[in-house]
Length: 147
Image (cartoon, rainbow, N blue to C red; front, side):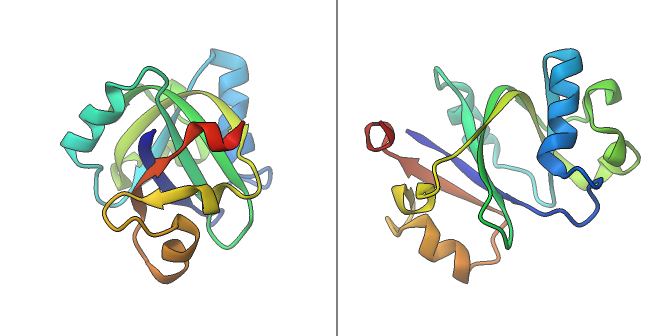
């Protein structure tokens, strides 16, 4: 499977944390919009992700061991309806350049970083992410390794 891995931090999230704040809206609405700050995801990559049967992205909590799969049904660059955005970042939506409509989160296995490889180099994501400041990586993940 080819997808992307995004870093996230808890710099301005509420006390409950980024994932929990997003989960609250999933529980209420059935979805939440997860925003990626900074440079947008390339249109070509968005197209590839949209063509997958089960689009999911890997979320990496910077500086922590938390990793999550986010199941995505839509991806867009336009700011979505604010009702589906967590309240704590509704006033700074201009900072987010790509939006992912997430319907569920699942905790990724503890060894997920060793099972993902950066598509451009073939290097393990765990090694590359420690040395790179890149906000996202195009990755390959072998589904059968997780079974």
